[in-house]
Each structure stands twice: as C-alpha cells, then as structure tokens.
Length: 133
Image (tube, rainbow, N blue to C red):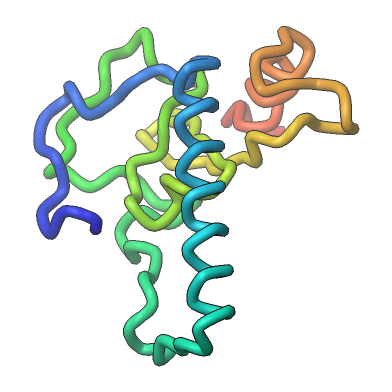
C-alpha cells in the first residue's frame, strides 16, 4: 500500500538506473499476478477504490514545494517516479527547467533503445529543452 504522505526533502530524487528498472518490473509482475488472482476468484474492486495518480505530480506541472529543490546535477536526467501510482508502471520522469515534470515510458523505444541508451537520452534532452523558437 502506498504511504499517505509523500517523502519530504531533496533525498527523494534518485537517478533512474537498471536496478530501479528491475524493481519496477518486479512490482509490475506482482501487480499483474494480484489482478489475475482477483479475476480467478471473481473479486471486483469498485472503480472509486482503485489508486489514482496524484494531481500535483502530473506531467507538465512543476514539482510541488514539499519535495524540495532538486539538485542541479539531476535536472534533465532520468529519475525514479515520485508518484506512487506510477511506481509499478514502466515509467520514469525527467525534470526540466522550472522543475517541470516530464514522464516517459521505460520500455525500449523502437524495440531497441533502452532508457539508458545515449541516443535516447540525447533525444529526451532535445525534447524537453525550453529554448524558444
């Protein structure tokens, strides 16, 4: 079960690593097994009881002040998810200028570029660059 209060401070920002991708895959598999067990036992959970994404951690919004200021070396780099709703889904975030949240899929892009591929990381930096045209 997800904690009621979000973690506080800048220590909440962790780089997205192959180990964190492995943890996400394990959580995802456990969640799928749980859904399968509920389906076999014909247990239905009402839609209002299902977890929902936090509205203050939506993509395109700035990180709330409760999380603190992220270290400058972590800007424009893949980070682990802050929202408990997405922690079992295959996603990661990147914080851009103004601490704006960008959410990306952690599955291989084009079936061959992992989230750690330098070409994909350059493409993400270009995508979130805030230089006006």
